[in-house]
Amino acid sequence: MVASIRLPAGQQPGGPASRQSEIQWRAAAKAAEKALPDFLLRHRWYPAKDAGRPDVELAEFAPFDSNAAIAIWRVHPPRSPALQMFVPLATVASADADQTIAKIGSNGETHVVDALSLDSFVRAWLYFELAENSDASGPGLPLLAGRTGHAFTTEIAHAVIGRSRVEQSNTSLRISDRAIVKFIRKLEAGPHPELEIGRFLAANGFPATPPLVGWTEFVGRRNEHFALSLLQEFVPNQGDGWSWTLDRLTRGIIAGEQQALQQLDQWLQTLACRLAELHRVFASGSDDPGFRPEPVTPGDLRNWESAGGLMAERAFDGIRPGHMAGNAGELGAALLNRREAIAAQLRKIGQLESSFLKTRYHGDFHLGQVLVAGADAVIIDFEGEPLRTLAERRMKHCVLRDVAGALRSLSYAAATVERDLPAGFPGGERKRPVTMLEKRRAIASTNFVQAYLDAAAGLASLPKSGEETTTLLNFFLLEKALYEIAYELANRPDWVEIPLAGVMSLIGNSGAE
Image 1 (tube, one colour):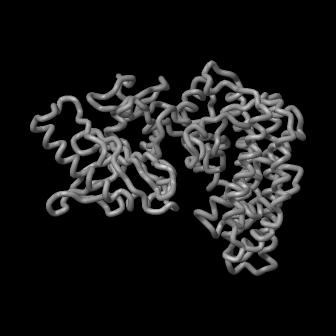
Image 2 (image 1 turned 180 degrees about the vertical axis):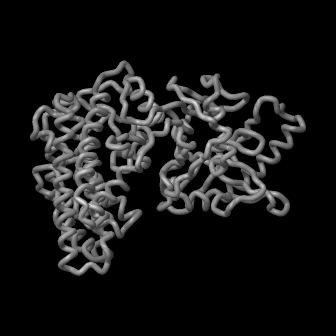
Image 3 (image 1 turned 90 degrees about the horizontal axis):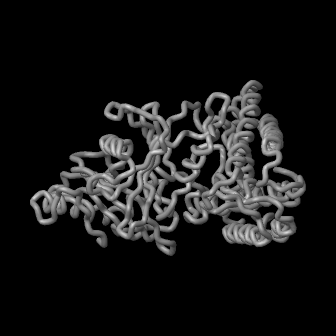
């Protein structure tokens, strides 16, 4: 164990309360440190599960209250860069097995659990985050709480703490129908993208995102700041865009409900307009260098081309046609024979004029990052792709990368509905919905791009010519599909057919997918 315990003010070192508290927490932290490797591997928010069992050591530790403590862990996955993970601890008399990290006491009577599984800890955290003196640290705690000034009140004591059944890259909890608190699991020192973007959008009056209410940061021993949580106002919604799109496609294509398809078309065009509005805010200018638009240089284009080539090589390296089932094997073999065509497609970006601006952008845009709020679309989760470094997630880039993410997500939605068609579908009858799904995907993609470009007319972060816009969009579509191949091979090999087919459809394609 490398970290010493920082006791709250009022517990003087050497005093009885201090000694008893330190003994208790040392036992809990030591037991958790030993058991945490296996606990991490059970959870989706741990980003290096495919690397193997990690080594873990305690990096920062500070009691939060009598039975809970802030704990930051230095995690070393095999053959991978070290990570810092936020897993606060709590001690309780009993807990479910999936919540328990370790047990301590002479008979193992005390459970050491992930504190975020306890409603009592979440409520205590909210009391701290919403305190009136939110710009100062708590008594003896290495925490800072901040507020945006957004008018917000809620009854914490009686709030219902809702937990999602679907794990994500962080832990988001619903506070009745009033707020969402997101606890960040993978930590890096410095400005957190979602926090700084949330503050920027609030200052610029962007309406299509949940208002940021407040946040909490941890102050490390070397005065580094780590964002631990963000509190946002809850926006009533009918679910995320991914689930909603699957439902509308299924009802429209399989059940023949034309109204469902009309609703989907209208909502997707609204989403395209909201995305354009977001990009317009990012291009509006700012005194903050982190948000100041910058000209795209020939060097930027070369760097993007190089990054696309490296992603292609990563995808190629993972393809093993003889070990891939069904159509995936055939598509993989065909793709390996088209390396030069892919390279030629990627090289087109280097021939462009750099006549536009690079700005901040969403960075991980797909249908799961949007809420369906009536007829409106509300954009969420601005932290970027979680496997990328903090510096990468804060970099300015071409906003068409977000458009490509939306189009690839539409392709995945159509393919997912096709995969879920009943197994007993007669061959001839199955062909009809498959053909309709592909037609619907193509129409929806074309309409999305057109609605976006209409709403983004005159945007300085887009090229001035339609030809350059098409070349860039096709580049980012291809880069995204290549990324998806590498991701699926590492995480969901039985899904790799979707991006393989996507890459094949993009080779030589002169228009949007």
